[in-house]
Length: 309
Image (cartoon, one colour):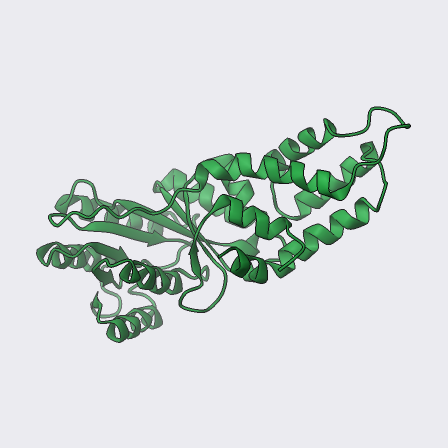
């Protein structure tokens, strides 16, 4: 998994490592000017203000105390950055755990803005969970985009997974309600419900998500067990704003970060984790069916900071 992450993080890793190499050529001291440049580099990599300040404060403790001190090598700087990123990301590196309970269906509601890859992520998540031995039902709750329903139905037909759908424009809450009822009646392990993309500023559509959660809870007081927010790594600080607003409006207890292979920055996840401390369940690193990987903080950081594949 680490090798796959390294291979897919070429753009983000190259941007960060090349920048540090330019700032810290052999023997250069970690002086105030260099620290300022490193701070700018980390901010440009989308680590966010709070995370960047934490890293720079730690680097300042490593800075030479006098002009006669030896320069700080690249390895020492990377080790300090790694240590600080681990302290931010390790607490949120929490795998998605599906309890095996024959009397109850574990329900997952997937939300996010348009274009982040929700439906694709659902198909990949379904593939991952079926490989883990779980039975599934999918709810085509994105009733406004025909392609989303067709995509789920195609995946379901290919893998013998039932997809509950209704006519275009149907009430999404009704679709999800029916899907949960079907899953529970058949003792299915997991229900995954798709939803239409929406901006976090569209209050009426956020109300629709609240309605979906309410109707699910009418059948099962614990539903949904997981509200998974999908965010796009390439959108930088917009992803942080989305996570903040969705969490405040709906309540989020898990994250999927997609398109990491297409990001030249890679720090978005750090900024979100520093501020919101939301569990990170998976990262998307490509278009393949098995390119949704369980998040591991150490692997993620090693892939970002390693200069070898």
